Length: 404
Ligand code: CTP
View 1: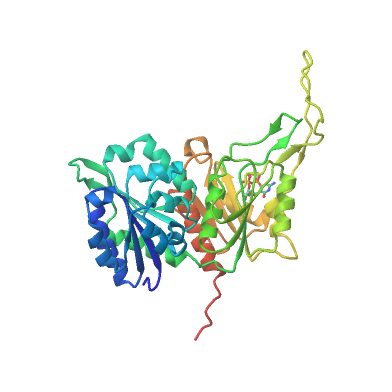
View 2: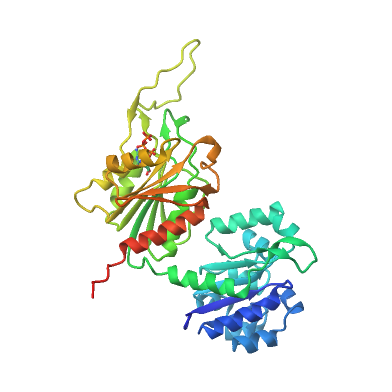
């Protein structure tokens, strides 16, 4: 049911626009309030009259229309929505979203909006596969934009391949899934660590590792999307800040620990950072100079274990403390041992052997070990792992129903 959920539907140009009519009908049947914006190209495929009749609302088309602006400014259009759905999302509109262009009403609303966005891409298979489209999609997804489809099959252009817009019932299911997830962690506080740490040797050199921060950032984004007040303490990464998350940027493990401590109390802590195990005992205050035939000896000392320190706190221990285990062999056995050693509740073990492509890659294969047993998750994108973890966290933190 979508009773009184406010969906702002943006229809861009493409033959799949005819399916948007069916989408509007299904959303209205479920009680959603639908407002629609059409791009100029969309007019070639469906009429504003059809969209207005089915949505039982007026249709917005023109950024520079005095009547439209005076009745409903483009800022208000998104402000008064719970979710923005772009269906079909053409290659052109996705490119404009990714670059931040705002030349028509659809693009201006998307740029001026802080509401969650769901894309249903539809285009020719070559356009979909083009590196430009894929790069734009990557940019949008990193910013937290959600996506349903496209599927593969016969395309309107006569070709066969990927680019077919998801069917209206699939888009409705994605919208219902979004509303079911949103708010599941409302009122909860979450702390996530992400990225590598960087331990200085001198003012220009450091010790670090290959962690990209992709998994930790995706988890923080998923927890925030589920309604948790989320703090992300991150080492240096190029990942954009996930929407709705308070990000604290740190470099060294000691700083990461301090920021984590300062963020307590939280209900759940997910420690996804690849913290450098050691730091240089004495950081040189000036750049170390080369001396012929003599390499400096660096004395290393152990860094604090942030996960163990949070998990073993007597005061303000989060109800759920979750760690990761980067393993290259005996994954389950090592994860079990690590869970006990660190005192955390769940360990998500992942295979970081070089051929698994986990570091810096898009995919992850998780084995979850908790007090009850072992759960093998299939190979998923890091975003899907984040989603599934957020759902499991929400279920674990949900107040148990009293037996009848
Ligand atoms: N971790 C941490 N602080 C550290 C080291 C690790 O918080 N100083 C956390 C990581 O964020 C991760 C978990 O501990 O959640 C496991 O990290 P991993 O590097 O796999 O384990 P180690 O304890 O370093 O064990 P080993 O290197 O011996 O496998």
